[in-house]
Image (cartoon, rainbow, N blue to C red; front, top):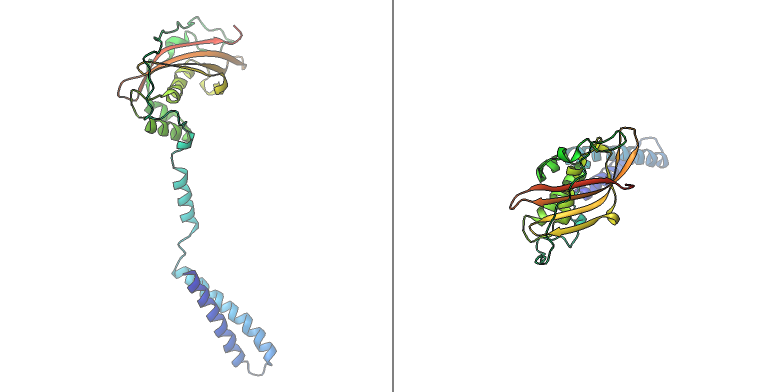
Length: 243
């Protein structure tokens, strides 16, 4: 179609140029050619505009934006580590028995970032769907991709998904959940037990009532309920890093 438009433009330009030169009247050949070039160009552009109106291009900006949107909606599977595959079977016969850590559930002073009696405020269980609804767009894509890739195989290593599910349990104990900042994986320790039980320990920084950032070492243990997308909180303890 683009070639036909170009052909129509050139043909119209040439025809009008020739027509003006032949019908130049008393003008000499030099002025006749100048007027023919200008007039033919104008008429050719008009014809070109008409062809664009009648036969729009397939590569419109709207189509390009639609293609970009489709590309952006692709699940970010590259974020998933290859070690966490549903097809990977991990032998857990020699795994240690899980023992819950007793939380430090004392009343919280004003300089603490934790709610009073924080351990009793954390929900007992949480579904992947509820965490998905509370996440931003990027978090929803990552969590959906994790769930789809790992499935609910009892033998698959779901350490990353379990760590994601630990986060809302932890933030539910804070005075200001939006201020929570988790340390990177360098300070994270992970332990896996039988029956899809996982324990994590890492550093968390959160805001207290005085406006100061306080750092805590947390220990969070969760378990996936069999054949479901529900996770149960088994143990949760937060303690100031300088205590």
